[in-house]
Structures are given as C-alpha cells and as structure tokens.
Length: 262
Image (cartoon, rainbow, N blue to C red; front, top):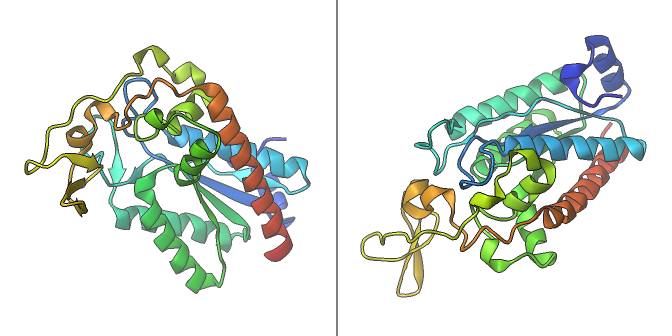
C-alpha cells in the first residue's frame, strides 16, 4: 500500500483521510553540503517521512506523505549555483497554504518533517498562525537539530560535526548512498578573518570572548560548503542509527496525534 499521496487516486486519498490518516509534509533545500553529498537535503527529509509513515502504519496508524517542498528559507546559500532559496515570508506563506488545503479537505493530523535549518523560523511562525486560526497544534520535526543531538549521543566524531559533515553526511550515506561521493570528503579549508577576527561559526565572530553576528555567505565561512573540521569520519552505519531513532519517534508522535486530535 503506497504512502505517497502523488501515487494514489483521489478517491483513495479521500477515503483514507476521512478514516483519520495522518499527513506528513517533508521540507528541505537545494544547497551545498560539501563536494561529497547531494544538494537536495529534501530527498533525505522525504525518505525519513516515508519511513515514519511505514512504521506508523505497521503499528496501526495510517499515514500519507506529500511531495516535499524542495526550496529552503533564505540564509547563507543565496549565491550557490542551483541553490534555490525562498524569502522567509514566502516560505511561511507556502507552508500555511499547504496546511490550509489539508485542513480544509479533512486532514487534522499533520506532521512536518523539516530538513533545513534556514526554514525553522518561517515554519514555526506558520505553525503559530495555524494554531490561532484553527485551534490546532501541528508538530514539526526539525531533522538536523534533532540529529545533531543524536550524533553526539551515538558517539559520532566531533571533527565531522557541522555543515558539510555530520549528521547530514552520515544520514545521506545511509539513505541515498548512490548519490554520495565519499572519496571527495575532506578537511575544512582555512577561512580568512572578518574585521581581523577569526570566524567562529556561520555568521559569527568573537572578540574578548563575546560572539557577534555578521551577515555572511557560505563561501566566506565554509569554503566548498565544508564548515566542520573534517567530513571524512561520517559513515552509513552512524546515519542508520540516527534515522532509526528519528523514525521511531516520528511514528510515536503520529500515534499520539491519533489519540488526541479528533
């Protein structure tokens, strides 16, 4: 039984939604993840959403998956060739309208699976609007925020943690190995200072032990998309552990929505 709404007939979808099926909306981006990983992290969000739906279905909670929103909220990737970004206001409006359509046509149990850090603020803003409009709390799974904590919990290499490395890199190797080029994984290149100060992180410099935020683009702080010290330790087995935990948690959330959302 397919979980992808796009592959089902309209009567099938209508019947399953009328029976209480949940809907998952994956989101991600087109950006640089270093020379070794695919640009489309929305592919990973979609794969994880499908695994959550399958796990939920096996436990008795039907779930359907929408096609992913492939364009992320604008942050550091505006000048990456092929890296399409949306302004925060536009992305928020898109998320609100997608959920409006779902709710208007009978869906009440909706889980967003967000695979882009730059989309967190507009997605959360959209959820606040929808809560006030419909008195409905829609949960969001911000994948890389969660996976970052799991990377450490599962003993991932400290050197590989960060943009262009883990957790995205290990998850990509697990879910879409055919798109990965591990032979191109590498150490971070040196980054020139800004105002004579070392770059501490994306858009951040420090002076006298205090962090200041400055607007930057990815190549200024992560040449070639690599901000971690060394992406090479990432591996598929580590990614599998992360995905398994997230899948279990996602299915549990859908079961909780089935109990509490009419």
